[in-house]
Each structure stands twice: as C-alpha cells, then as structure tokens.
Amino acid sequence: MNGPLSLIAQHGRVLSYALLYLAVINLMTFAVFAADKRAASAGRRRTPERTLLGLAALGGGLGAVSAQRLLRHKTRKQPFAGELNLIVLGQLGLLAVLAVLAARHALVIR
Figure 1 (tube, one colour):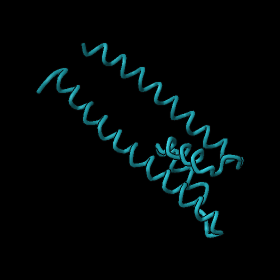
Figure 2 (cartoon, one colour):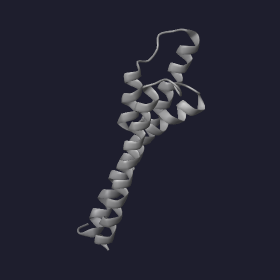
Figure 3 (cartoon, helix red, strand yellow):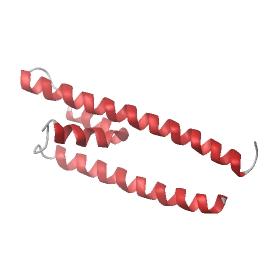
Figure 4 (cartoon, helix red, strand yellow):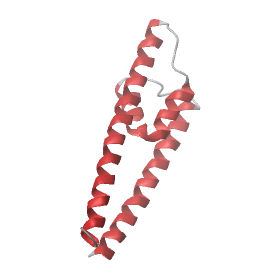
C-alpha cells in the first residue's frame, strides 16, 4: 500500500498505540493516587508528591484529576494542586495543537 492510504494506516496504528498508552498511564495514575489516599488514611508511608506529579506529567493528568476529585485527595494541598493544574493545562494545550495539526493534515491528504 503506497501513497495516502498507507499514510492513513500508519497514523491509525500510531493513534491506537497512543490511546492505549494514555489509557494505561491514566489508570495507573489513578491507582497510585488511590493507594496514596489509603496510606494517608492508615498513617502509613506515602507516595512522594514528585512521583504523583511525574505520573500526571507522563500523560496521566486525567487520571490524577479524576482521583483528586473522586477520592478528595490532595485537593487543597499547595503547591501540589497548582502544579497539577499547570500540568493538565499544558496537556490540554498540547492536545489542542495536535488537533489543529491533525485537521490541517487531513485537509492536505484529501
């Protein structure tokens, strides 16, 4: 398969892997936030904030914010909450840029 159809097939595979990665990292991030919440409630050793923010920065922003809201965990803790919001805002900005680029690319392929 050559030409535009080959390009579309390649992009479809990349998109599938990207979506799979995002699903896994977000589920993992949610699980780590939940484990940290349980540890906090039980007075056990906690997950470092750097680890929680790192998972969010690696693409787990949705999982982090979901856990934060649903579990009521680290919602008022500063500067953590602000840093998490900046990470998610950056990810939304990146998503917007990628959407614009994808739309432009689709117009060129046709």
